[in-house]
Length: 263
Ligand code: T3D
Image (cartoon, rainbow, N blue to C red; front, side, top):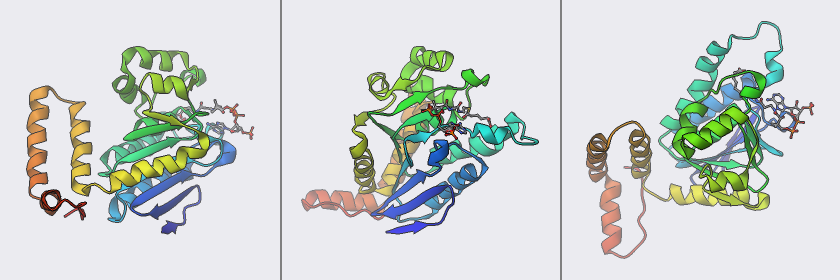
């Protein structure tokens, strides 16, 4: 196991799974300048560290993340919002999508505003029974940001996206499961173990194949069928040249579990 020092989040790596815990529980893990900078930094650490093959993102205490730290914005000389979003939030969301390792969001409590967007930008989303999603932007006179208006229609369709964004009503975990916003709901006690088990299962796969799968799924959201087929063919060309593919074939004929190295 390895862990490292950040002030507003915790980071540890165990058996190929890196865990990020947003750690400002008194503020419901709201994103202040420090937490945003550290989140971006830890995503870069996760990308560089070859021992990390999948990532779990969760929150300390009773919340997942309450979005932008609104009290920070009341301070003197706040950054204009377009600058804040472009320079602090968007890089985090892009880093999550560009990380060639899947992220499992373990939504342990309320996920609000940009905090919900963090969960949407993950690759797998599971929630505790007590979790909820609050697309709270409109309630404070803001438009959606951090990808909320992009992810939501793709995850749950325009009708549910519109309800969530226009009404800002909290959506409990069971309802999020029903509309497909999360893929599983488990008890609060079981959530983290379950998330780590899912991530560990991903981590057993070929890192290259997993990274290419993430690229294929993301591209599928942007292009038509013919382009998606062509992109899949290119990715398969890359996968077919890896030692992991040779190892997968050898393990199959030798009736054993493969050992993937990412080569
Ligand atoms: O830079 C920019 O502004 C642009 C980017 C915007 C992106 C966004 O994320 S906008 C959306 C920001 N988030 C919100 O609007 C959510 C605000 N919070 C809430 O609506 C509620 O707190 C919750 C629904 C999340 C939870 O409600 P509840 O009743 O369970 O808890 P609470 O009592 O409201 O909060 C507990 C504490 O956390 C409280 O502090 P206190 O009074 O005990 O000292 C509260 O002030 C603090 N807290 C909650 N959310 C935030 C926060 N502190 C700072 N920022 C927050 N976002």
